[in-house]
Image 1 (cartoon, one colour):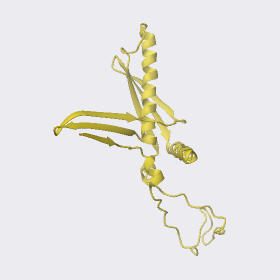
Image 2: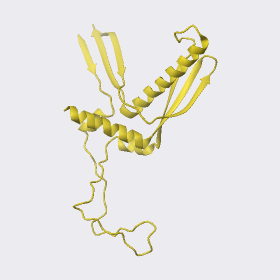
Image 3: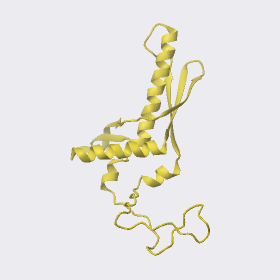
Image 4: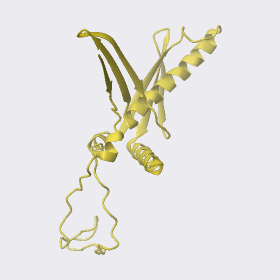
Length: 180
């Protein structure tokens, strides 16, 4: 008997199906005071017909609000790089560690899709396979550091501002909606 388990553990796949929660707003007759205005002064009221809709809050929003920047670190070993020249191996390791950091950053922004398969025969697990996949676009990442770790490894750290993450997610959701 074969049991097949397919898991879609991407953070964004849940966004299209989740309900939105709108934050509580002040009553329509509550006074609005402009910052830096003299005491007792009120800001002009905007007509509800032209006021922009408040942005919906999703399940992902609380996670994003807690972090000002997203940080990811990637690693690569120098000696396994496919080149005979040691200097070229170091450069390849730096590039590989940077790509690994971008992969880790992509996981944080878009989530990770997991596929798993388990084969059971005679009530014994015969085979377990897992496959992880990350897909997304990252732009606006800042290179924080490229550091040699020990004699044979490089570590690269990237950071991404919360606003860039929101832009990337909005772009992704717009593309998903256009496909449907």
